[in-house]
Image 1 (cartoon, rainbow, N blue to C red):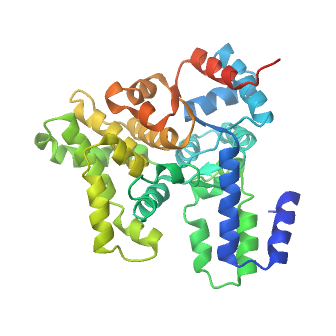
Image 2: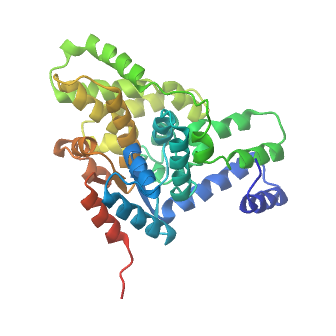
Length: 360
């Protein structure tokens, strides 16, 4: 893979400056941060990526999808919006058998993402916990900081721990930097058009969770109790990640601090300290508490989409059922996080038009 001219120039500056790998990674994170805060961030669930792809090919499922696509192109080209991708976007599209269709979505992602992707789920939760556990953010929570710093290149949404792997490599730093720059040129299209893509079995995940949930079914007497079990249980899976992100074993003091937040009664406190886990758990609890509903693979996908979009993006375009669930008044997700959640095409058109510069 050949580096683009812009990346060649960037790499030449890095090499001329004599920066080591740590300094280079710091510069790299700063560059992602600048991109992330430079435009309004919009999240598309996979359904909307498909809608836009079909509109671009001249066969929209609805005529209004072409209007949405044209508005998005206009706003992106004007430097107003960006649509960074997520790990679940890439995983869900990877499961499609049509390579040409996957490739077309990948090209559209590359066109609109501004070269950005959100940290994948597990790395993101570990990052949120490690920031929350620091003295600077224990009181106010990690959300104000991580919201603008949890951004990577698209390949890092698909290949977690890419930079950490090279930090441990024994090669000299200039070689590591050169390789990371080259790998970062991998696009969403490159990833999605590969013929032998590994599958992602969301149905298997749903079966496993249904089995685990059934074991404690009789113990749950309220929605709040279901949420408590999901929230505490989810965080307990990340103790190794906390230690890894903090580059040390978790001290007793940090454990006490984290548990004090875990067991706090105020929703906003938990949401600001553990945003991804909070949203995933509250949506999972809502499905679990509904005795007439069986957790499905689609529910799992929806939880991943919502827990990525709502804390980290300014707007979320999704399907009707997930929008309705996310907007449940009891959850207070919009007041807490400020993300605009939309499913109706008319609302999306109105929102996009509201971002256009006022013509004098």
